[in-house]
Image (tube, rainbow, N blue to C red):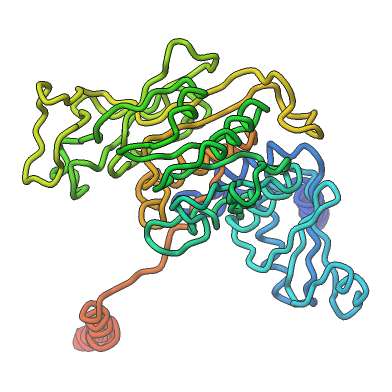
Length: 448
């Protein structure tokens, strides 16, 4: 009996030691949260897939609970890749390191990749992934917006400006800047792409020629325009092998969908293309124009955005109470192509120092500039589409459609009367009721 008891103790100790060894060598985790909030999104995993070299996080945090919070956030990335390291540094013991990196806040984290680093104060997945995305890019990539003719302001904060878009581009490692061609008659060599966003006055012939020379040298272009005359831009359209169509795209079922106006065109399905391959939501294009490719072009064109068949191009007045399709008045039946993606082989590098770029030149032309404004960027799938266009034109194919969505709000917001009702039931009524039931059962048992 004593031997059996001794064997039980030995087996228990052996099993305990075995469990300690297994848990030390192996780990497993399961995410049962709603929407897998404790796991990395597919967008973050695609960013990691595009970074083949080791990643290192250096956390400047004093010993305490803050270190555990940092470790939990970084472990989400370490579960995806085993070459991600996290090192803690006590700020009080490494003042020289703090001065070297410019760290001035306890709890700040630096992420290092290929000799470059990015600071992190807020360790949300969105911020971490955007920092990784910036580090994975090949240095500074400038997005140059043509200005001086009433184009969309890339830094403005009014509804019709592109300030929100510029913030999103900066977060992904693309740097927007304005360029007035009359003052600087050359596109900078470090421009990843040139943006012409709905000029309201005609460009000078020399300015159009600068853009054409930029295209001839292999530069990438995004041209956004709206219905109406495009004085002086005919040579640019011809250089791209495109032709603008007359009229404004109309979507007749606007009342059922609540868009507010028949001239808000919808795109619900997308032809196969790298820009739209992961795009599933609808996109909205207020007051959009149609375009088509010419057969005599050296560009390979692909439709990027098409309206549903029930839409049409309206050439008449849009101020009336009803807009009705009338082919006799020049209206054109849908589907309408609102956007084209263009590619062709580069005859030469885009710049004298640019020898590593792929041999394919890219351009995107869309008959609407409103869908990227501050007022419309976050409507439906507009943001995802816009960022994918810029990533594709900047030739960052591995980073297309990696915009990390904001974490869903898991808090419960109740109106005042519901909060008072919950307090009344669970604080005022329920405790006395439970106490009364208990006393009643006790009294009934005593009587028996």
